[in-house]
Length: 119
Image (tube, rainbow, N blue to C red; front, side):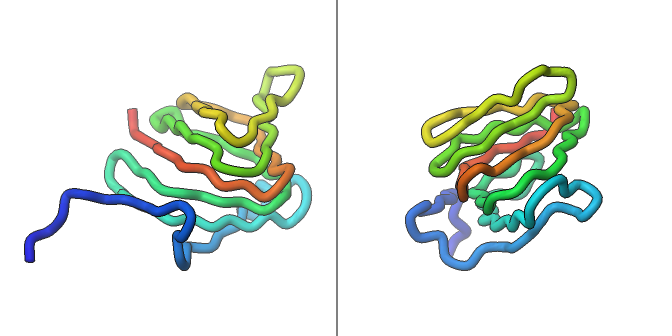
């Protein structure tokens, strides 16, 4: 059988994922837990990611861009140098440009489809 060039994820039934949590020095509040279901892992990465409520620091490298589409739940993103956080929920498409610094607060359990790429 040949190798398929078609990759997909059925977001309603993802099965077992890869657990994670923020590094202790990045934790601000709560005990958020993460789950990821990677789809492709190359220069461009894609998959589904979920988080339980909590607040942690986020620091993106100068060579990484991330875009994500929120399927469920609510988050607030706090960007360094900005006065107020931005709140996002289901249906929102968000881009974290290279060098993003700030924090991520999961208000209610959330899931997103993400794409990251080296620039």
